[in-house]
Image 1 (tube, one colour):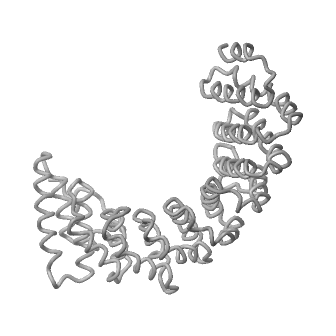
Image 2 (cartoon, rainbow, N blue to C red; image 1 turned 135 degrees about the horizontal axis):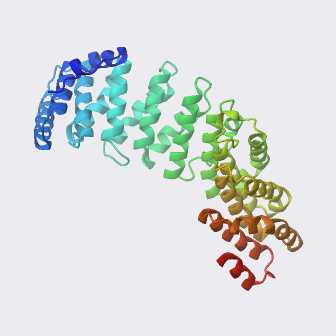
Image 3 (spheres, rainbow, N blue to C red; image 1 turned 30 degrees about the horizontal axis):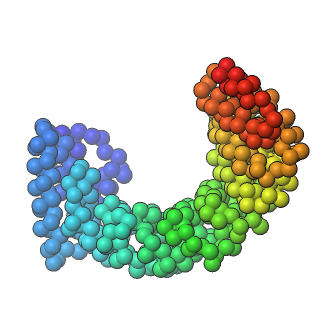
Amino acid sequence: MFNLDDSVPLTENTTRLNSALGPNHVHLTNQVLGARSDAKERDILAAEVASLRLEMTHPDVDSKIMATLLARALFCHTLGHDVSGFAAIKAVMLTQDAKTEFEKQVAYLCVSMFLHQGHELSLLMVNTFQKALGDRTTSQFEVSAALNTLGGIASADMVPALLPFVLHCARGEESPTIRMRAIFILKRFVQLVPNCLDTHPKSLKRALADSDVGVMSAVLALYSELIERDPKPYLSLFSAFVHIFGQVVAGKIPNLDFQGVPAPWVQTRTLHIISALADADPQLAQSSALPLLRTAFILAVTLLDRNPYHAVLCESLRGLRRIAPHLEADCAKELAVELRPHVDKLVAYRNENRRAMGTEGKALLMELDPAQDVNQLADQVAG
């Protein structure tokens, strides 16, 4: 039989983990690894689940023992044996009773695995989340674990009670990782309750200038969600997004460069936001958004040998099509003349993806200058 203790050279971290999990967990793992058939494995796990159900009801189980029991329950759960019926409530209780980081880690991990959005026990976690996110004495480890868990089980009913605490974490100065995770939770809250941040329009401005690029990228994702729903409250931030795009293109955020392209995913997100805001304000479309989107499109076509520029090209093309109806006729015709050779270059490629974007470009040219000969367009696309 395969034996974890004898057959695998254990690192110091593995030894420490095995010590925390206890000998019963190691024995269970060895049994499963040594099973000669699926039927034997199922029998071993079924017996373990029955044993855990009984052990967890014992009145003398302290938080340390409960953590080891839940770790074994989680092991069974990941192998296809549902233990949430009796282990979920124990995991919720352990998040409140845990004394060590290991116990808290197991508790929050089990909650995230056993519970889901709308689960009847999710609301029992509200007080625990409030305590973890609002108490200044809480360790960063626990705050991070709480945010990770909240992202998986949050429901619309939980948003009003937890929004102030998550906003506090998003504005905190302790850890950029916590700020970034808090912003992702806010995005989840917006998906659940679209108007939940309507009374906090200025609460995230500071994050746009965060010194950590991960936080800045996260807040762009949040603003993208908010602006797509209702852009008007955020028109005043247009210049800030243009500034961010300029910083990215100038290579001022080297940490996010990918395959020689400056932060391509920040570029695409920012272009999406700029085009959405310009769509809501025709004056911005022609005066500010058009030069930026046009330059991004031409640059992407020119540097298309760098793979990430395909994403920049696609987003800039979508942005141009979005603002096209707001352009004056003379400006639209001038733009069509300027873009036509670049669109023809795309159509001429053998690569199907580039040809597809070239076809989109032809559609843009037709919107900008309807006098284009439709038959010539069809011949170019077919060729």
